[in-house]
Image (tube, rainbow, N blue to C red):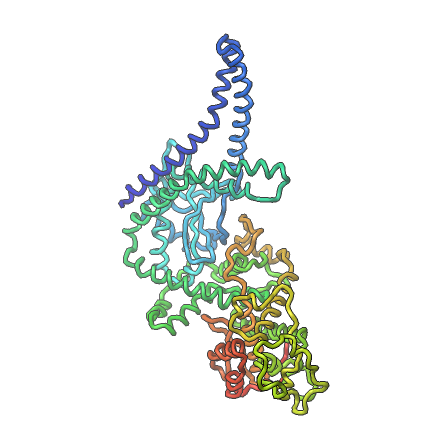
Length: 629
């Protein structure tokens, strides 16, 4: 499909949308027109008689009601604020080279220049119409000779160019030429967008979409809810009627833009598309494995975009499929087009935390930035010790006694042995009948009293003595047998996982739900960076990264954290940061990778042998108390 053919297809679909709008208006005006004719017929001597009077007095109120309804729908559609993507606005003074590159690209494509540039913490780029009064007046597009008038129609009102939204990871990972090649089809879309019919159809569809969102809110009284329910039903009917035409119109616009961009850096764009996929993979891995643990601890990494470069460089080192990508780092990165890349990176990093985790709009006592150099100590170490402390609090509530091999008899320090002994699947009791009942009473083991004093060997005791420990109390609202995720684990692991899940849920419920108020300095810096959000942020996070962790995952994380704390306090291991996997334990400067398998064997089989052998090989002493937060 040629560029002109795509524009014609999009324009025909836009006219179909506008015709639907005209038909809806005609339906609204038809009863009023008939009522006017009937009323005018009275003084002229026409339409007289009882039948005409009944029709006149029946149709006139109906016409008034239809007009009021149509006026209400039109008012809601006109005043409803269309959805706006959360972005960080980039002023021309902050990125003159970037604006110059976009203008040169628009000149080569013979299309209008985007009115502004904004960044989003996502691996995508698009054009966004922000001409609605609620979005503020867009800056006037600069004139560039005949190119500025391309696509404009003097007999219609001027159409403001859309805003160019660029994914921030592209600026840091891509080179300047690659970014220009990737943006060419996006910038080419300003040509069809300038067509008055296409712009009018888009405004109508976006207005209907915004009206549906406004009428769906449940923050009004019953009378308003009833009225808005009717208006919303009409808006939804109109939106469904023009959905197919609107989708085909956008396809035509995209086809026209892609065809026009064929002449600009076509060969380089093929190579750049590979970088798009790589950037997406690295960005997703960085957010889920590295940023998310920090966000949960109340810290937000302030250089996420710089981190994606480190993550992708590490990926290129590990994956042979990515060989050669690191050699690109010698070329000029696209972030050099910004005057202050660090400030922009910090602004987009904070926006990413708000979108994907629901953090506050500015820094505060419980929400502060963290640099990558401080990440191991301030995030990894704190996370492990917090999880270990929660694990021992849960064990306290279960009445679990101190671990075996403590420093002194009766010591109740937080040790790894306490966890291992509790999760160990109890062996056969020598006092039991060698031919037990195949269906024993589940409450029978609670009938044996626990030992009155710790065993002489420091708490290890026999298998029968360990079995005499108090049985875990049932968890309210969490039955391990009903949790499919805990199928295949031991009863003690399932009960402990349920307890930990309940504790994490209670801590989350006790945390303040309203965003903390930012300080004056942070608010001023956010405003200067373009973070004053005109988008609706009442339902954060808008794009949650992962579903809540399951009980099995929480238990594995807490046991791993306890092992890492024991390694740091008894062996001198250090917390580290792996760019692809997040928090890492470093023993002798080497990252430990085989710990998760040993932990899962303990959870699923109740057998600590493999984990104890691993601890012995590493030189970790599980009976030593660890430091908690």
